[in-house]
Length: 244
Ligand SMILES: [Fe+2]
Image (tube, rainbow, N blue to C red; front, side, top):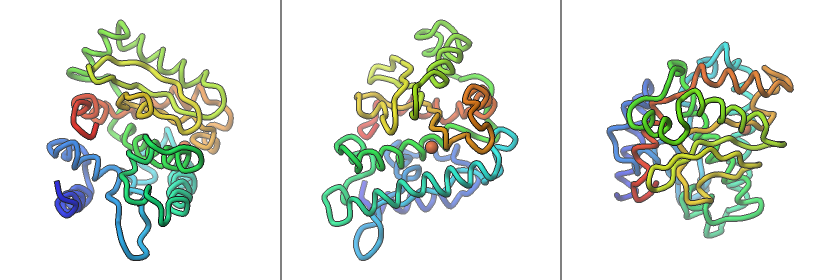
């Protein structure tokens, strides 16, 4: 796909304004472009652009307050993009996709690129119409690999709550669709282990400090009321694509 075609698709995707769900009919490559923002090359434009939230700042109330999202998306997530753009200006990474930078970089560039990518992914893992249980082939794979949804839910929550320090709990898939839970520190991601992210929760304290203070377990428990299984299922189905 040409860059122009991808940009057009992105405008179409973002222009819907109502539902990211309708985007699943697009190819996974176009979907990635829509979720993570095409790079804007040339001139004084920054290499990487923070994509818009897929819902309003207050859409996840009462799980997450508007203030919590304002700080997390508007301060923390935005800062990772700002830092990354400053770090890669005039360097080869500025011409890569964000995913490429995440997979190939190290040090401060990786830390900021990873956090930029991880947060964009995280926002889509929640939805004001979320909750419930997984569907379709993802539900079957969870039953196969964890015994039951309830056993998976407990294992994922335990991984998120017990992760020492800052990081992310992930549900990830290998190329064959085998699922695993990964508790990874700081900006680390399954992309670095040749696995595809399916679902994640951010357990950096900045993700919950306004609403939950130090109560990570309560923050993790609430995640299940907004979890976006439609997004997770789409990611699971798309795992074998060339860019996924
Ligand atoms: Fe965060």
